[in-house]
Amino acid sequence: MIGLKKISFFKKFDDAHIDIINSNSTLAEYQPGDIVYYEQDEPKYLFLLLDGRVNVYKTNSKGKQLHIHAVEAVDFLGEVAVFYNMPYPITAECATKCKILKIDYKKAGINFCKELFFCKELVNSLYKRIIALMQVIDSSFLTTKERVARFILSNIEDFNGATYTDISKRLNMTPETLSRVINDFKRKNYIDIDDRRNITIIDKDKLIEMSE
Amino acid sequence: MIGLKKISFFKKFDDAHIDIINSNSTLAEYQPGDIVYYEQDEPKYLFLLLDGRVNVYKTNSKGKQLHIHAVEAVDFLGEVAVFYNMPYPITAECATKCKILKIDYKKAGINFCKELFFCKELVNSLYKRIIALMQVIDSSFLTTKERVARFILSNIEDFNGATYTDISKRLNMTPETLSRVINDFKRKNYIDIDDRRNITIIDKDKLIEMSE
DNA sequence: CGCGCACTTGAACCCCTTCAACGGGCGTGG
DNA sequence: CCACGCCCGTTGAAGGGGTTCAAGTGCGCG
Image (tube, rainbow over all chains, first blue to last red; front, side, top):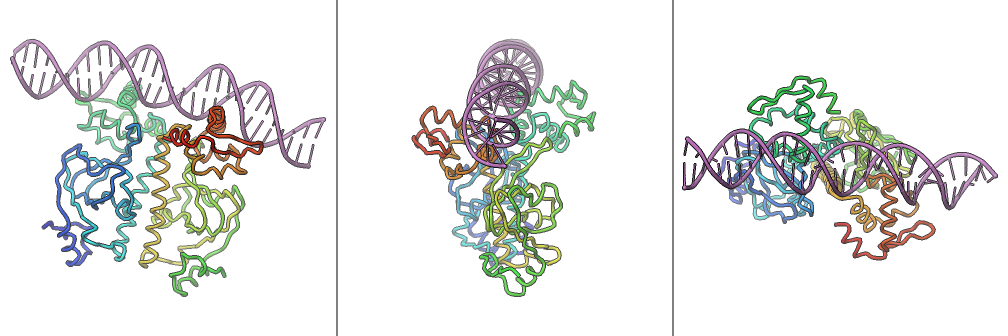
């Protein structure tokens, strides 16, 4: 029995609903790199990411990946597929250790849209997806330098502990390109990198200018 | 007074609601090329496209446009901005003559999310946006040849009367590139083009193979 | 007839990827 | 403790897909 009541999302559910969900759900632990679901799979579960971070990306027929965004707990996963009865449109891969509630929504027989409060949550969730997709499209306009500048300005802490290879995936470019851009910024004194490869911003204005 | 009752979307509204919307709306006629709203504008109206087709695209700081999709009547326009109180994320431009209902949603004081049936419509609308955005992202994987092949296979009728310049915008490529690809397909006998520049498919299998 | 617009075609260019070679750090096993 | 392998980052060189620029060409229409 999982304490669903503690999750803000479920606060408005009455006990009967929570029981139904509880009795049709399993809590799973995932390791970094584990796949929650693959693009094209038929939806089986509605996932609720309770702890951790999951990367969501699309893969084309040639195996190339396009990173869309990182889903942070607590949030849904796979809700678009589930509610529209279509194959999962993307692949979801754990970036960290994750705790995920797998809701067998068919067994649970929940018609979420019957409940206004749930419908509202669904709207919120879809809205977040739209914003993420818009950002991907926005950044598809940008050159690699612009994307990196933007990333440094808004996600500098993400460089801690992460490899360039990981970051380059999030930025949809090759590690080589990321390396070249970063070293170019360093050479131009926009940023500095210490021994432990932590980045500090030296010339914020230049970076802002650069980021568009 | 506009016959809102006739529009399927409003069928479930009671008369009081319809009156409120009616008395806070104006019906506007647009010509091809007219802008319904610009990216970054503060939302003023919720638009309901009653007749015609509207192209929706993003523009970057260098003026380059990325076509996202074509909205066909009857559908909302601007609902993401309106419901989330953010600037319009895209630009909407009429492709044909259009009839659009401009709802002054603030004056009307409608809290759409209070009504379950409306909330459901909103979910549907957001869902459509997500699908369109996913398709844009999907096609960003493809080469120009793949995109053109796909377009010929699924939108061949759209070549009638349209210029290559228009089509190239929808496909997010330059007219030069479209011309080169089309003529390449013709040279290889995948398609044929008559005097009036109507396209017929000769080798459908090759096109399918080509489209990925 | 002449003008404008759309399409065509070639050539240069650009941005990024790909490929390849190399170096350095770190853990593991001998 | 050293040796080895591996992964990650770096750097250069080549290549590719598409855009841009520029110079035609052809057609419709006043």
